[in-house]
Length: 262
Length: 284
Image (cartoon, rainbow over all chains, first blue to last red; front, top):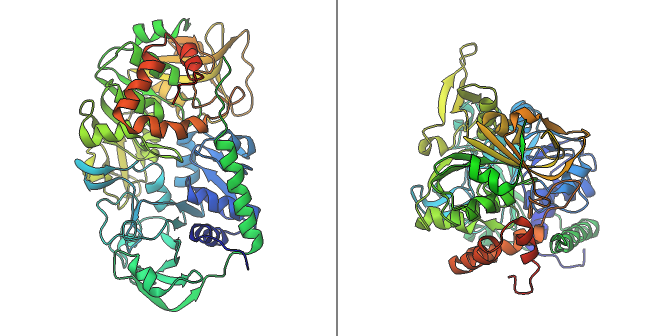
């Protein structure tokens, strides 16, 4: 691999590699959607992508800006109502992988997308829950992708919007949550996985050129690096080219003005 | 039989200050024209209900129409924040906004329960999350058969539901296809319903995944071609992704927002004039 790539590309490619043919994946918008579609266009052509707008089996050629672009409807196997997608398909246990982004993440994989500061007098009001709390609990497992920094990988989030392993150990299991929880986190520095016993997210792979010190410095809790941590294989030419082509098509399509001529 | 009427008379006659108003459309078919008309008519003290407030409620909140918002995800999809919504919650501008916050799953079920005439919805949700600490309407209920602890939320029963659809016939039978969101549930849960449509046709021809709302569950049908923009109507338009991106800069600042709303909504008499005004060279 001679060509240069940036850390966000490595993050997206590492995340895409985690999906397999036949996986039924409930996709969040943004980075998760990019990674899931990259998987579909490279190693997992038969991954099934579900968007919360009700599109099941979507195969967009142009990455959607929202979870309900017409590209998703026109390429879906079936489109169902919003109550149905959450009740029958997600709560009904049909989803293998929930793929989420986050504003903040803690060491147990708990996600905050609600507020920074006090709930009743927030410093920053974030969008809120959307589909995530139930994707996080009702999918068989969860993948999370976000850039790693002390602002995003925090010691104590101000709010838990979507449950990971809560306070760690068997806390999640005690709540009788159907899904296993976050099994992999993909950042721009590496891959984190929960410790089998404590459930604390531990760095199990570092992307090429990233040092343990760098990862530790970008984390708001005392990050543990797994003793057998590996180096993530660098992007292949095909992965990189497919990702760049996909993003170029989206950038072009999303900047096209489609005001009605009236 | 639904009245086939102008949007301005439907809003004037069917939406009152203080009403609980649900304007639905999940990314697709968002009734933006109706939002503008509510702003033009200066409706106030509304409780606005919508899963994804989107630009339509960012505009209505910024113009001071709302006293309360019931919602589950308040962002500009794929772009970032809804700045007017944030300014209202963070700084009480232009007025304080009470919020009642849910997840998509519980809100979708609450509409469904409203349509079904039930007092509550029951689902497996919110386990381990903080939201129930701040929203007293999210409560626990025990299954009488299995003993499982589940979540109960009260059903949504809006005074008025407002949606956009592709077509209606001359009696007011409404046809929707593509992403149907929670519009059917919102209309059936509400006391009154306003539907703006791309066009009135002699006979609606249902297609795959289409939803029919019979004329006798609809109060008013108003022809407003393109009335979802910058959202879209499958078969008629595609999503105005470029506009969604440009809205970020317009809404970020109070003055530029006020200027935009004045020129493009308050000073236009209807949605056709609004749309034409967006082609002005001066449009930000």
